[in-house]
Structure formats: structure tokens, C-alpha cells
Image (cartoon, rainbow, N blue to C red):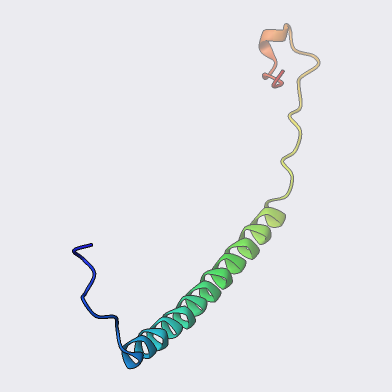
Length: 76
């Protein structure tokens, strides 16, 4: 393999790489917690707006209309 160096990395280089990877893993965990908190806030906002909006009232048809064409469409 042409990409591989002739000698393996030293212990200090490997230790430095491990520390960098651990730091990066901690950073990713913090980012993940922030994203989860953002999702929880947005879900709560959606829930609040959904409850606030309530259920739409049923459409009332005019039973005294001259024909079915004069009534509003009932969705069927």
C-alpha cells in the first residue's frame, strides 16, 4: 500500500490521537444533547398550539336548501 507510512506511529502519537478522539466524542455528545433539547422544545410548542387550536367544528348543512347543490359540500 502506497498510502501507509514505513514505520508505525509512536505511543505518544497514538495517545494524542486517542485524547483528540475522546474530546471529539464529548463534543458530539454535547451537540446531541442540544439537538434533543431543541426537539423537546419544538414538540412542546407544537403540542401547545395543537391544544390551543382545538377541534374544528363540524360543517353544518342547510337542511332547508332547495337542492343538494345549494348545500355546502359535506366532504363525502
